[in-house]
Length: 451
Image 1 (tube, rainbow, N blue to C red):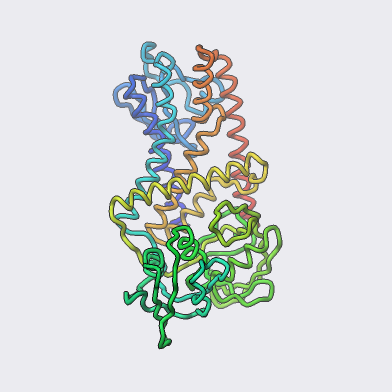
Image 2 (tube, one colour):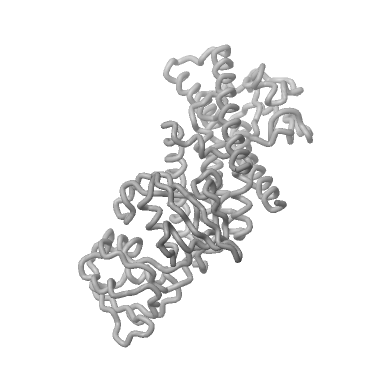
């Protein structure tokens, strides 16, 4: 419990600080008077002043704000932000007196800082600690339909076969196997433990075909053990816990993680009876995978496949990347995570994702699980949540950054700003919407943990 609470404090503290610091530093840079910098809402627990700016740590730890001259909202929003600042206001340095581009830069600085933080975390981890690579060369499954012409010999591999060498080079991880299959010449020799003759595979000079082979054609062995369960997802609702070893599904024996995946992929919206070993006991659970649409043309998954929101526990080693490669990998990871969050937002807009919304308890549980798996995993989750915070803040809801950006876009189109009265009414409406979303998220948290 202590690890979970500390993880929540670190995650919220870092992400809110980084986000609000973005607004703060850009506002200062363009000459806007910053009246208050606050972590949290409501009245302060700690407060001090430096120069013209008040610094608060407030008692409602669900966000933060930067109060700028010209944006001192009254009513509900003003009270939530602790009321008026005690610092005298310089009208010439008010937010509304700055050029449109400067105001837009201030509004977008927070989400930009969250995305930059995620990119830097991904890149630093890839360069300093390395990317996790499966610490095995054992084969689990070969999907014949995913093999390019000439690679048919791979279908003779059986579960448990260990690839010792490829083209004479010793294999120490599954990443080594993949790298050699991607970069070798047209004729590739695989030496298998216990076999006297190597497998000879002829591979086409076709990058997509080779990617399809290494990603989906030949799959490594891993035990069907659960490492991480995302709150609100079908795995959590069905009762799966980190450390569970899946040994059966709908009466069929499960011997590897891929067995679990194949069963779930084919069962979107259908209840699957799972048997897991938890410590020394057998536990019987029922999990209903949610439907997910596949958008990867190279994938072996069905067009609509089942997903439960759990990650496997794979023995892994770390492979450090050169700095330039780490930068590219960090950028790719950032873009990929943005895509995942946007897909979640799309489900919300379609009315299908409200049950999956999570609040502070969800963040605490996920970050706590990740912290127990190690610092690297915790920092990856921190980066993932930072991306989520950036995207959610860009939603066009008044009171969020996206809503303020919409005000500025409207001003640019109309050639004059919206009236203060209209902005205030829309902001108060936005606050109600945000509070409703928060209530739903926290209610989901409570319901999940009562079940």
